Length: 204
View 1: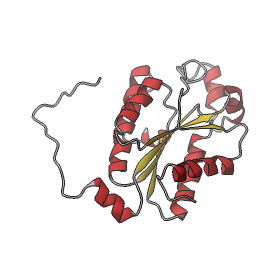
View 2: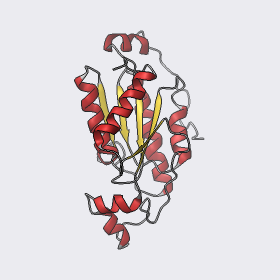
View 3: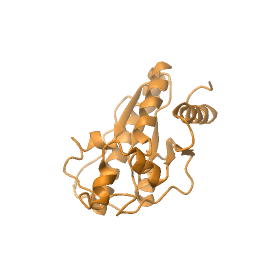
View 4: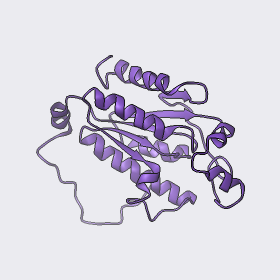
């Protein structure tokens, strides 16, 4: 458990609540947490989901692993400790977005179960939806849009998830997608159907 270093700090409650923001937005705030190997399709799915939700009039935002490392997490590397802190910060940011009534998609490898559980524990209203973007490492390597698997195999990139660092797949994700077997449109439909059945959004 992360220790609180700052002392004499208190939570300040505003006059506008999450319920007020959700009423203004016309929908609930929640987080769809995509996890999986590099090149499994997390970012592609997040973009497609945001487009589908935005077209329906929902307020959305994507937190993408590479993008976040350009700013908020630019001081973090890929050691186990830095990966843990990377996901801790994203969990906190995603929670803030959810409190704003925003539908947030996060696209991070997030390789460790404990880190994902820590992020989930921030959402005490069950508004955390874990989506396992499941794709065999050999298929991810064939895709390799950034050429990073090749560099990992050459030893240029150390501690690379799926090659020289572990990935712990989810044991009980809300949604499990085999992106090596399912087209993008089908994956999006499955997520939308889940969101409708669970009343995160109106049923389609």
